[in-house]
Length: 543
Image 1 (tube, rainbow, N blue to C red):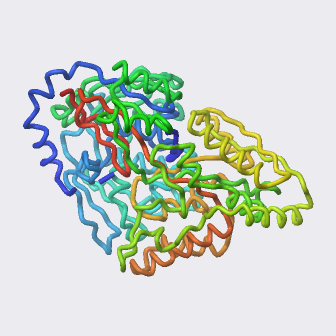
Image 2: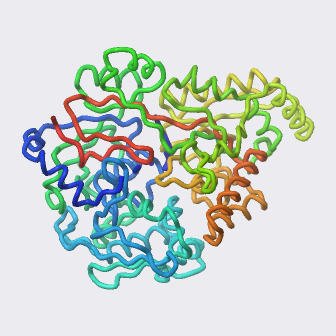
Image 3: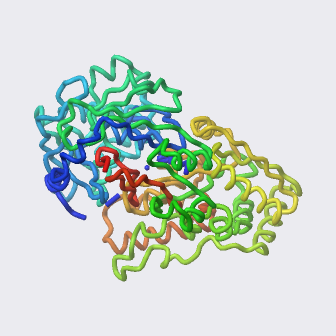
């Protein structure tokens, strides 16, 4: 399924050594077919290979294959050391992290990966001239927000190289999920190589430098296919059992399944009726369905008269039968959204109850209330008839969801006409960034389990705040949640309040929590999809 995270982008405690040891027992058999190419599919092409700029899940999933940060995740999604020699315990009340880097980590050009590479990358990401839409990944680092706003110098960022292989990061406050940031969102960059290409860094494979298990190849910036080729300079190259991974962009569900059945691809994603059919048919043994820490939602353009009207947004939300959407349209294990936070993301620290059990269903289906709020909107707008354009991207799933939303609105809100504009994901993000939309469909995928990454989607503090929703009370709650001064229980209660407030105002309108259904060949092992992350092919092997 297409996502924009991040745009849409986890988790048993073992050390890296144990992971490598478990692989080592089968090294001979796994290495036997190492030169045989593994072919997989993607639903979207890469938009950028620059980790400072990637804000779509296709690009971020690709970057995770050829880049590596201080930490990474194992096959079960747990955080384990990578460039850092161990997972460290922060000091200074949870605000200071001091890492020792492994001395055998190298870039694909043979140069060592150093603490300075992390400092350079972090400074580049927060530098306003970089125009990164993912500064949220590093916002907790001291002075990051002020630097991005142009209020402080880049060199004041809380990232220091204490030596060639010693790095220190200082945060503004304790961040319970920061290890996930380090494992999935923060990467180093080689300054000399990056500055050689400037703004064009990461726009082609040739303008990209890798430090991970693979090197990106055969991507010219617009290619629908590309390759990951084993990095001969990777410090743990002996544990990488497949030398070549070919990726093909496939937007049509039937094509993806046909390619898999003909063994043209060994890993692919299917959706809708295909999932139901696979569960009953010959593909049952190849099917794996994974619930994701991902939410599909609709941002509203609060800079336009029609869509900044809260009653209109409420009317639309009540007009949507989300249970019908997931059961009759998606049919892939996705579940109806009941709050702006995915189910399974967080539990009540006192009772252990899921976040959404405590909120209750904040987005019920009610044609009567839809009509009631539409009448209020008509009165305040002074219009009986309006036309709205729904912006989406051009995969089959997104088109189907857009058609469902269009039909529901036109059925229950007499006088509202909805047109659908479907474009490639990169075009959609560009259009959203420019504010040239009424409302849209997007998915946000989070690399860590904490409600704030979803609640932020309706906040002006969000680095990808396309809709520009503004509510003073809501911003106060977001500020309190992120301050790091509350107890776990108090913070949880504030997040509950925020979820209910954004539902009342329809700052953004969630639709469903996504699930991913994949077909994996029985000839391949080590391909694991988890709640927080796509499969890392460094763990894959031919059986």
